[in-house]
Amino acid sequence: MEGDEYLLKLARYVQLNPVFVAAWRKKDGKERRKVLRAYRWSSYRRYLGKRECEFVEEGPLLAMMPARSAWRRRVEFRRYVEEGMAETDEEFHELKERSRLGIGSETFCAKMQELYDGVRREWKRPEDVALRRVGRTLDVEKTVATVCRHAGAARTDVGRRTRGGWLRAVVARMLGRHCGLTQREIASLLGVRTGKAVSVQLSRLAVALARDRPLAKLVDGIERELKSELEVSNASRKG
Image 1 (spheres, rainbow, N blue to C red):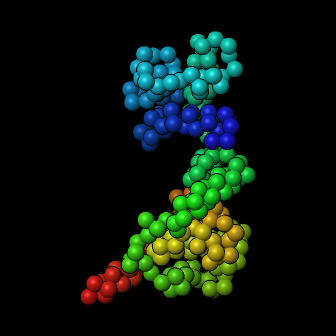
Image 2 (cartoon, rainbow, N blue to C red; image 1 turned 90 degrees about the vertical axis):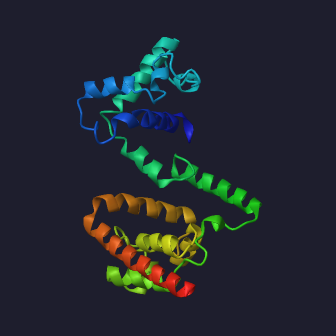
Image 3 (cartoon, rainbow, N blue to C red; image 1 turned 90 degrees about the horizontal axis):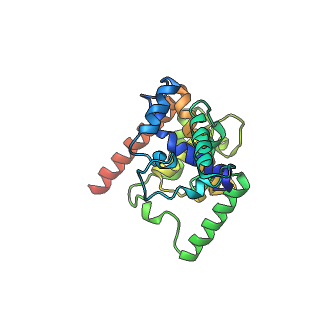
């Protein structure tokens, strides 16, 4: 987390999860507050001063509240959390979905990526080796060609950055899922500077798929064809 602001937003996001499920999202605010304060599987009651969850150390988060007394800090934290039921922090949610290493500014996330890469180099082993599907991957160029055919695009279009276009992000998704490439390898293939940039593209694509039905249909068609090719490949390999 980059600083107290992001940490507090994360804390609020976690505490509000019980009343953001589909069954409660559109309920009356008073009713949601009542459920939230009584929810037994959350540490929120401890922050309100209840005796449950005595193993929770609530002091660090409450200390971020400006009030001087412990009681007033609890009141301010409760107000901060419950105001989140009426507000939609789109920026925070986008940051949460975008980064797998940390939440903060682009500079902060880039620094986390740099530190991660340094630690990984010290391990002296390739990234994602343990997660690769050895012997169960498709040919890279054939996979790219399949995506281009479905999208009605040329192979040369994959290397071009276009505003509002999803071709490179869809190619990246398929290369990771069906060809076993790491995000760094995908970045090199697509002419993107870092694996982090690929991660951002994939996160944005995931959000777009939930909203754009034609795009979701396109990606689903590509997925089904590639899975079929993988099954045929596996069957012939076993034979």
